[in-house]
Image 1 (cartoon, rainbow over the protein chains, first blue to last red):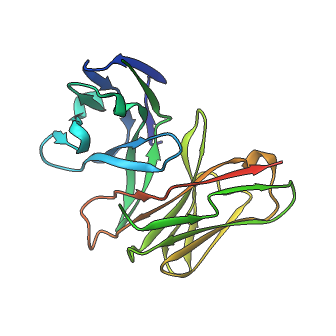
Image 2 (spheres, rainbow over the protein chains, first blue to last red; image 1 turned 180 degrees about the horizontal axis):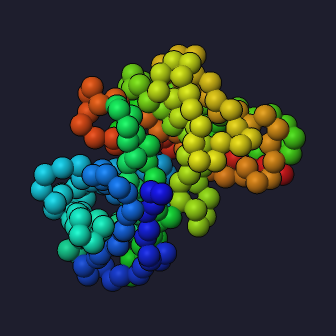
Image 3 (tube, one colour; image 1 turned 180 degrees about the vertical axis):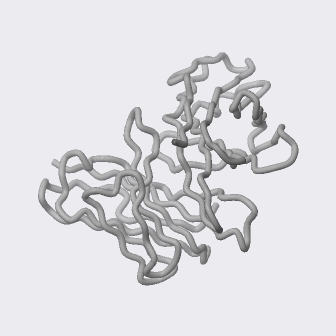
Length: 115
Length: 116
């Protein structure tokens, strides 16, 4: 069955430090992968997506992610974290058929930023 | 931001009462989804729609029904609310592959529902 695992429930980093959030997926076909961010009390905002081509994808707010098929991973990175990056981050994989796809989400990683 | 609104944004209701949540979009997207978000569970799909009057069940559909009579509106109904349905509910939309090469979804602001 398709699944997404985010091993870290909560991560704390210092402002200005680098960040890597881990995501592992299980899906038999070519995966379409996403990272979303959710600020407190808000909806989910798409950070970036991978569906083909270059395995290093750039997103908004200075985030990037690298797709590694051999490791079934799609880790999110940012070289220098800002206090405004404190939020919850969700990795998702699309299960698809025809012209429609459903998303399966990981349980999320909450990011706290220390001043 | 995608034009998605949800109403109400907050609701408190009693066990056993019917509740309807509304999702409205201005993007003319074909697909619409209802998710619930609970601590430790991430987002789980309740129902989705692939066109007017075309709907299907998701992972956690028991106790919920949906309707879509217009492209822009997708209603989620709890026929008889229970405390286990206390949650934050999100609506999402996406285009079909005719217009997009991916399956990205855009989310509304959410409805916080408390069942007492």
